Amino acid sequence: MIQRSWNLDTTGLGYLPVGFGSHHWTIGDEWFVTADDKPHDALAAALSAVPPSVGVAPAAPLVTVGRWTLQLYPYLKGESFEWGEFRSPEHRAATLRMVREVHRSPVCQARFDTFHIPGRAAALAFTPGEGPFGARAADLLAGCAEVLRSHFGRYDALVRDALKLRDRMVLTHGEPHPGNTMRTRDGWRLIDWDTALISHPERDLWLLEETEGALPWLLDLYRLRWRLNDVAEEARRFTLPHTGSDDDAFGWTILRDTVNDL
Image (tube, rainbow, N blue to C red; front, side, top):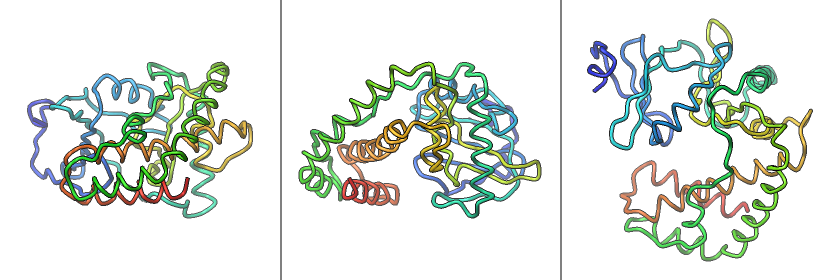
């Protein structure tokens, strides 16, 4: 598929067991291939917005294979990081500079934030799928049903107010955490742009714990959405048949810890 779609020599193709929810390969030290379980059009709209000064755009048209969308990138050499705390004040400051530049960029063809949380219905009316985590997820969600409904109600109220402030919306990355940054010989870069949307600056700023120029209640909105989205996404996972893979086990940890922290 890679050879046919992009006319590339696939000698040296190797799978990288990194990340969560996506699949990655390298082709020697020249190309990096990613497969995302996202619709082609939505992903293409997000990736069309990548500012070249701080991001890395696909090097070829996207390719659809079943429910997966393949992307080809130039292979970046440099220091990469993981989800979690920033390594240093310099790392955080560099990320904030990139985020501010993104917010000043043209919105291009990126889509507007709809504030929809996929899997919300699964979280609120859970039916377990066959697999090792289905029953556990059912017990967990049943025990916090009222808390979840309350949080979703608060989220809906915040969204209604946020939609009155469309004039504040800008291009946003969506997940500017340390794991989506790299330090290359040409400087710092933001990677993984599949989450790019036109939204409020606070969509990025809350992850950086940055308050300058931000509205506190909008920071609360996006912080809450992140947590509810984790609950909904992993609840939906366990409504389906699952095998107990490493991704399933990690998804269960996310679901359990997020629910217990609400």
